[in-house]
Image (spheres, rainbow, N blue to C red):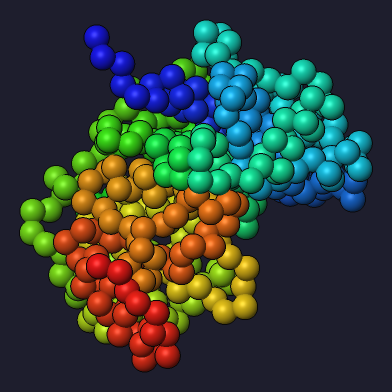
Length: 373
């Protein structure tokens, strides 16, 4: 029997993301209860800070034990933990007490031995460089920290990059409960209070899938096939824009200008978390589109805010992603996306027409860089 590529990696990655999703909901529940009861003290670290470190520690620990030759790129390093023993103990309390309820599944996932080992594990990600050759795992412990602390949509992202391209992506969406309204829609305030949200995942060439998350093992997934949602090509006037006007990294006024040029409505759906915007594309209709114009005088976009979720989107069918100049997104340039400028994520039937409108806008603004076919 033929074994699917990345089968072992996918199993460990999905279990690891499910375990840390449980952790994030624990942190969020405690923070919300303390806020209601006015029990926050000056010595309490930010719930986001504690959760970020704990999630990174557990994700890397699980992957590193299973695939010791792989490297990592993560958002955090352990400098702050080594300088603050109280914070380190808060993180360790979470790391050492978070488990899946299924003993067989939990046994597949390693956990740091103690606080010094936990710090060393975190540093594997924070000091990782990525690059063009070999395998590395990229992770975003909590994407959408501002919405996380408000009990809105956030994500845990884990992706495997091999020789500069995505080969596996897992996205935990612990608060995600889809608003129906005639079709699946991601909404900031439509929160899964009773469950643990949804997981999206994909391996290159194998399609994408969605499953509910829980405390036990992995539930049976459902295949995502966006091509089955519409037979006709998407029209520009019907585009539904996924955006975040609160993000300082991009220019939403340019997205509005693009929507007006397309004859489409704006705003569409507002989602703060980068990865949750991809989730909205993956689970939404083929008319859903995301276009991002980088803000000037801002640092390059971080790899971990995009990698993995882009693979899930393209594997879900009919999705195409390039930068604003028509170039594929390059995940082999290190920790940042320094080889690309902006983003167009859209149905393959309309991507070229959106790129044409964007090109006209860039030329009007004096950007005459060539657009690739």
